[in-house]
Structures are given as structure tokens and as C-alpha cells.
Length: 261
Image 1 (tube, one colour):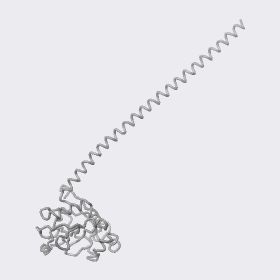
Image 2 (tube, one colour; image 1 turned 30 degrees about the horizontal axis):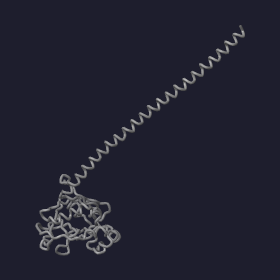
Image 3 (cartoon, one colour; image 1 turned 90 degrees about the horizontal axis):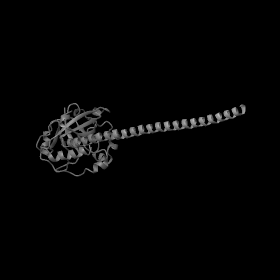
Image 4 (cartoon, helix red, strand yellow; image 1 turned 180 degrees about the vertical axis):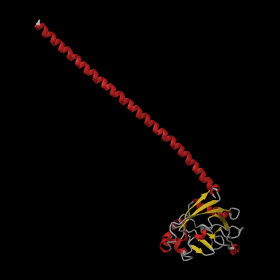
């Protein structure tokens, strides 16, 4: 009985071992399956999120594209505007002192002049142009680009417009060296300069905002000392070194009529 009993115990032990091994394998399989299921879910969630992000970005991009297209259309419309905003800096010769001037272009006065000023404004030609000639109770002149290479691109002269309005205070006119010699230089009439009318100076626009606040505060310190030939050849390098307190145009941009206060 005892021998038989011993054999029974061995069989039981062997059976127990087999069950234990089987259980172990099952546990491993369950863990592997569970882990695989979690990984699959995480991967699915991540894939879902990744798919969602580009979709959101794409939507934003489309919105931005629409906004950009709208802006371009708006800018094109603004360029058809007859209002230009000039931001002046170094007023009264003080660094950083700025002011804004709005000029209304008048095609009925000078269609050729307005056409040229629109081309120059669209090209941002007047940005950083120094007001190199300022005479008290007369005018303030500017329009030689600070980069001589850019200035040379605008040497083509335009024909004169007939004088249809007087050079009154606040009007803006092209400077010239004789008939049909207008290029890029302009001046703001600080007082009534009616005598210029008979010399062929045809105003193309008028200041509608900023005359007293800005134009009257353009620095007159250097009067006519800056040499135009040197400005043409050396640009702002010459002016900044020799006449650092000159007032200048920071930017010149088209604005719509609704922006004019």
C-alpha cells in the first residue's frame, strides 16, 4: 500500500507540475494578448490624434489662405486708393519723434504725377528717404532714395501736367529742373507759394491730416546744406554721417479712405 501510495504521490506531483506549467503558459498568453491589445489601442489613439492634428492644421491653413487672399485683394484695392500715409521720424531733429501725414492724391489735378507717385509708393521707394532740403516758410523737399542703386532705377522722367491748382500751403508737388524733368523728388508746400504756379510746378495732392502736427515740425536745421550730387552717389551713408538729425520718411503706404480720420 505504501509503495502504491508512493506511486500515487509521484503521479499527483507530475500532474500538478503539468497543470502549473499550463497555467503559466496561459498567463503568459493572456499578458501578451492584453499587452498587444493595449498597444493596438494606444497606436489607434495616436493615429487618430495624428490624423486629427493635420486635419485641424489643414483647416487653419485654408483659413489663413483665405485671409491671405483677402488681404491681397484688399491691398490691391488700397493701391487703387488716392490716399497715402507717410510716417515721418526725427521730427524737430529728435530721434524717435514720429508723426503721420495723410496725403490725398488728386488725379484731376495731375494724372501723370499721381500715376508716378503711385508707382513709387507701391515700390516702397520713399521708405527711409531723408528730407534733405527744408527752407523755413517755403517748403520741405525729399525723394532721393537712400540706396543709390535703387535711385538709378527711377531716372526715367515723366512729362509735365498742366498746372490746374495753386501751390497752396499743404499741397504736394514734384520738384523739377526744367520742363518734363520730373522723376522722384517731391516737396510739401509749407506756405502759399503761388508764384510757383507760373513756373510749371503742378501739385498732385494735398495734406489732409498732419500738416501742423508733422510737416511744420520737419527739421529745418540743415536748410540746404546736404549736397544732392553726394546723396545721389552715396545715399543715406552720406546723410547719416554728415546730417544725422534730418527728418525722414519711415514708411509710405496706401490707405483706404475709411482709414483717413
